[in-house]
Image (cartoon, rainbow over all chains, first blue to last red; front, side):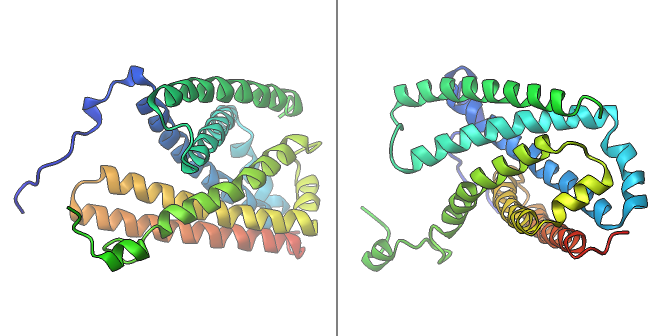
Length: 130
Length: 128
């Protein structure tokens, strides 16, 4: 097949314009949460196989690296949630002007960071002994 | 000049014949996941402990089991749609693209089935 002409791709956009950054981060956090879904199903399956199976799985689920994974998942959750709400607002036709989307990009990043910090703080307190 | 027929414009369907279905389901599952995701995270953080007995009795509750099943199905569906778009955008080889899309679809259905089955087993009390 002959190479077809393509519209400009990733490289023509500037990361500092935030729209690309927020879009990219939304996909990345979404992929992280997909991996988190795998962890959730693994955890549920271990529970369903009984106390012994869960005890074996727990050494993996409660380890130091696992805690880092949970923290990353909380960050991804906070970002994907806030950025998703921005998308739903866009879907109503609002906030699509260049200046507005620049502002909302900042707002999304700030709100996601605050939400992530609150959730991480809560998780640290609630699961101290984990 | 538009290449679309008047009927095509009115019905709003693309060349694949399913129009905005993918877009619509992605939004629908996103809206459903707002309360479901928030509920799951808040519940997990509110649990007094994460030992076997606490978790099984929590998941075994009717409402918890129902909400968890809804979460697993909705999240798998939303994830499937999201990963599909990413694969379509970044896997350029046509054969590899089809293969990865099929695999991703299979994995997501298997994930949802495994998750739902596990929740049901816990809810119906088969773990020992």
